[in-house]
Length: 243
Image (tube, rainbow, N blue to C red; front, side, top):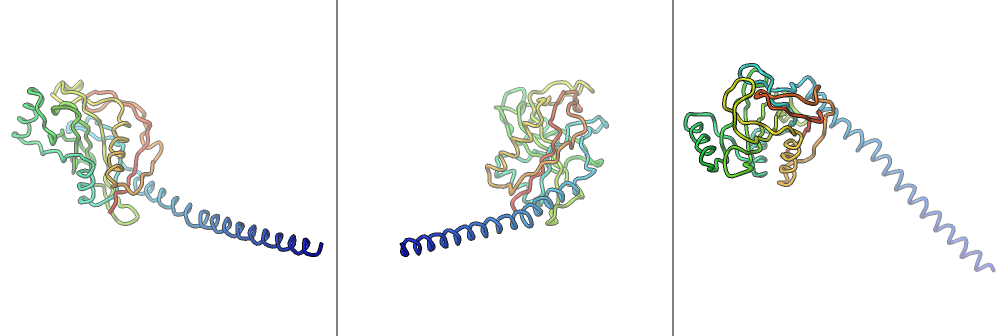
């Protein structure tokens, strides 16, 4: 009987020590999450939100017509942005010159590939895009994924510049519904282009993380500078590029 009592007593003490150990681990996890991880996440998100507060939501054409909506931002140096886009399979767009204009016309009419065809200029802060990239979606320059980036005067918490971008998908070449000029027409789902670009960067291992700013776009649908309709969930994706 005494042996049974001693064994029972030892079992109770061992169980008590285990419960204390579990309680200590849970307390440590709680303290780490509540006082370190979660506050750090909030500081990170709020840092991006304040850095992008007041950022423009629409691009403009040279004639001052509202253009494509802003739907993505990336934090990183110019070298990091360019190398990340290349790693994701996107090509830097050629500058608009007579030679590139003739080449894109040839690509469109003869159905020939032109993976780095120029894009028309759009404007933020009174200046055209600093960088533009594209990814062909067919055998010529008519259909392509593309994005324009403007370097803002904002920086992330590490001091790297924040690039504001507008990603859209070109579906065909035709006449602008607003000016009658020859232009690319875009697909209406601009969120799909934003999400594809993020997915490509993530697959290439170039994104540290992505956060979202809800209700960034005041309007959920509209028309771009060529008169093409678009719709969006209104969110701005904020990606941090791997150094």
